[in-house]
Length: 407
Image (cartoon, rainbow, N blue to C red; front, side, top):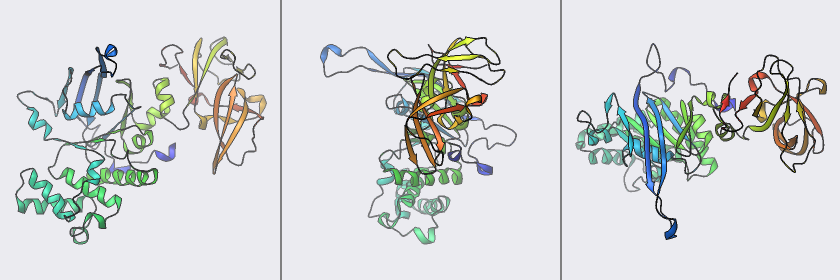
C-alpha cells in the first residue's frame, strides 16, 4: 500500500499557503438531498430516498478532495450539489466565505466558478478542429473574443504540457490518450474556474488505460495546482490522486482524512473493509482475562463454522482490550513467526502466488483470514501458520456499531 502513497514534495497540491494549512475555498454544511421513491410496482412507490444525508466537508484551496464509496452511496449526488446542478433540501454551501445563492454570490456567478469534468469530456474533441482551434472555440462559447481566445489556447497548451509549436496544429486522432486528456483539461480551464469537479472521469476505460490516465491527471494537478473534487468508486484512484479523501456510505460521511490517515486508522469497519486490497480482516473476539499486558482474547466462532477454536495470546504489552469487539488486521501487517511468540495460528487452506507476493487464505477460529506473504515462503494448503502483529497494527471496532475503539 505504501507504494501507492506518493511523496508529494514541494509541489503538493494541498497546504500551499506559507505558514499553515490552506484555507477552505468551498464549505458544505449538513447537506441533505432526497428523491421520491419510484418503482415499476405501483404499490412500492411513495416515500423518499435520502441520497445525501447530512454531509459536511470542505475543499481547501489548491487541494484535491477525493470522494469515494460504493455505487449508490451519494458520491455523484454530492458532486451535483456542489455544482448546484440540483438543489439541496437543506444545508448550505459557502464559497470563498460567501453563501451560495445569496445576494453577494448569485447562483449564476457561483456556477461560473465551478467546472464539472465527465468521462465524455475526454472523448468529445471535435475531430475536424485542431487542438488550438478546439480550445479557442470553447473560449469563444464563453464570450471571449477571437484574438484573446487564440492567445489563451496557446498559453493553455503550454500549461498542460503540450508545446504549442508542436501540438497546436494537430488533430485529435494524432494524439495519444494522455495527450487528448490534457487537451480536454485545457478546454475545461479556459474560462478559469476556481473549482473542478471530476465525476468518475476514468470509469469507462480499461484497466491499462486507466492507470495511464491516472498518472496523466496526477501530473496535471501538480502542474496546474487546481482546486478539485474527484469522485470515484475506485479506492486506488482516490488514494493516488487525492490530498484528502472523504469516504461515503449510505449518503453519510464515514471518514475524512489524508489517504494515509484513512488507511492507517480507519474510523469504522466499513472504511476498514473498503480501503485496502485485500480488505482488512475483521475477526469477532472477546476478552478472556484482564485488560492489560498479557490479556488474551477468544475468537468467537460462527455457528457451524469449521476450524478449531482459537485464542489470541502474547498480545503486546499495554494494549487496552475491550470486552467484545471486532479485531482488524490488514493482510500485509500479519507476520509469520515462531510458535512460542505467536498470538495465534492460522489454518491455511489455499495459497495464491502473485509474483513478488503470495496471499494465503485460511481460517482463525473458523473465521476467514487473508495473509500477505513473501512469495519465497514455503507455505501451502493444510499448513498451520503461527502469526503475530505489532500493537500499532491491531485495530478494534465496536461489535455493534462498527465504530473504531481507541485506547
